Image (tube, rainbow, N blue to C red):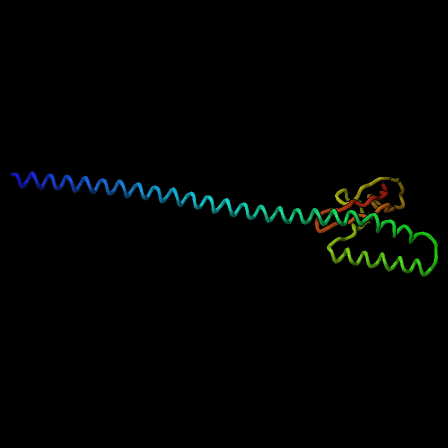
Length: 164
């Protein structure tokens, strides 16, 4: 009987040890799952931060680019206004070359002049309106100031006179 009691006690101790081991194992598995979850969350946050930083950098670059071009446009406008005046032929020829070279440089930079045939409120600023049957509806009659775009972004709206 004593042997039976010893065996039972030994089995109880082993069962207790197994229970402690399985509890310990469950606790370690839970800690591993928590750590893995934290790691995945930090990894996702870092990826989102990286993407947001790239987007902000590109946005800032585009803003700076547009601001720079916007500051040059009044100079180009004034040179083009001089071309409408009469003056020395060689001087005017030089100005024409400067204007052509400036427009070529703007095109290389991705800046394009807005086409002014039909009025589009997304590209044009109508400052005058006339009723004249000689022109079609929403036809641009006169351009007061050229407009420019950089990609899909409008740098400056074209100021125009619209008919009908």
